[in-house]
Image (cartoon, rainbow, N blue to C red; front, side, top):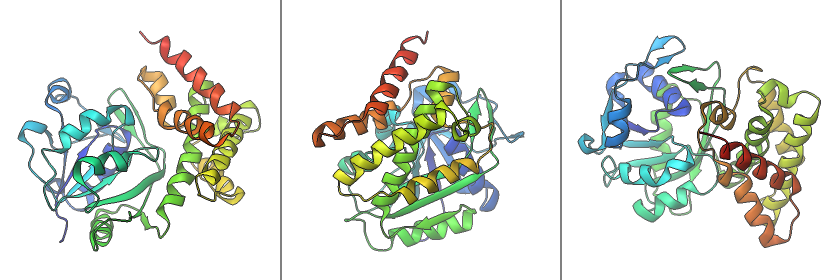
Length: 304
């Protein structure tokens, strides 16, 4: 099957970035955003600008959406339950599905509703998109890495790869996507949480000092938990993720730091929450993740 039309659920930093690439390189009819009806009523008139240009990608309410060839899930993990309901309107028997959510659990939740046949495992990394208010900016579009789950149907990975190539989306098809997902989780556990707690940026978290020590400590704890879970993360993986962070706009910031500015609930349960839970199962000490988890909860408790 040749993928011609994609729908994106999640009109945030990641969704806007990849939606704009699809619209620019294939055409505006090749992509649309789908929102649950309540959110559509609140945000249908938002005047969003992407790197200074108006975003003119069509947005439709779930009640009017039709099945598409490819569904891209680009929400925050905190919105997963609503997203699964919204997906039902635009996922048909042949709809391919890719989830760009942080963490390592979203595909399992999707498969419980829609099965594994049309679903791939994936991570998005290396983008420096920032979305505050109605202004969306980025200089590095990043890369999507994906691969087949054990029960993904034959041909699905190739079809998504063909669409991404036409859309100008940088991608890599991974032979061991589970290793890549844990590598990305390791980076998020250190980077996202540290930047939120210390109000940091890509520049401050990679400079010598307390933020950098927090970054590396949280990542090393994730390495220990990953190994206990059967995934062999290495110092080379850690160094690669730090180098990737150093390549980004030093004034940019990851999503949890933006959550603090916008006073939105964060994905801390997908990061420290996941590591702490698995660490307890394996008898591993993770004091840095426990500290970051507690601080994020304290920060969020002060939101209005």
